[in-house]
Image (cartoon, rainbow over all chains, first blue to last red; front, side):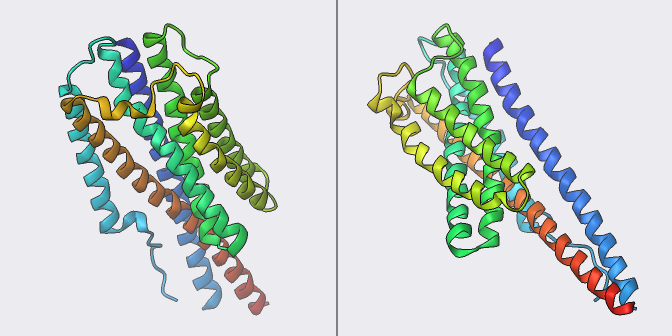
Length: 45
Length: 234
């Protein structure tokens, strides 16, 4: 039982950890993109 | 150009629907695994099989996709191919890590040892190390490492037949490739459902990871655009 719980627990943890990291990177990049777009608008006007 | 929120495939309704379907598939698969009969000799520990084998399949699929993207980049100059290759390599590292952790836990219960330097385990470890080398080269090697990493992906793809056929050509204590066809009806359904759920998860993660790469590329384009706009003003 211990080995099964460890194996399943590790896989779930790894997948959720990866999803969290990708989500955080994407959110940060989208924030930077929006900021850049605003700066481009300001410099063009 | 009006200010707008950057839209990527990760926020599209189709992507959200894929996430929901994947979640439901996992619910059904986990239920089927819980309901599946216990294997006579190994007992409960055999249930590691339902997650271990799909992760191994995704390690190989990721390597193949990484190699395909690398071929498109090396011989066709495809930037998209390069982005697909990097995203797939990261997923290969993730699922390879799951294989290399769940496998030894199962082995300890079934064989009495965590690790044996036999062909299947060793070639799988090599495959994972090559994907890890690819990801590290891309992360820390700078732009010049892209071609080197792509060549490494092709080298990793050569290892796939070795991993798959190793149990046939070498003396091995690892179960053979035909073990799926010997499963009982209750076990077989749970296995295929789990494989389907993991493959759907892989597709969802690949789409999200590609969105990161696309956003990164767009960011570079916009920085160039901003520089040009500021140069015109001065």
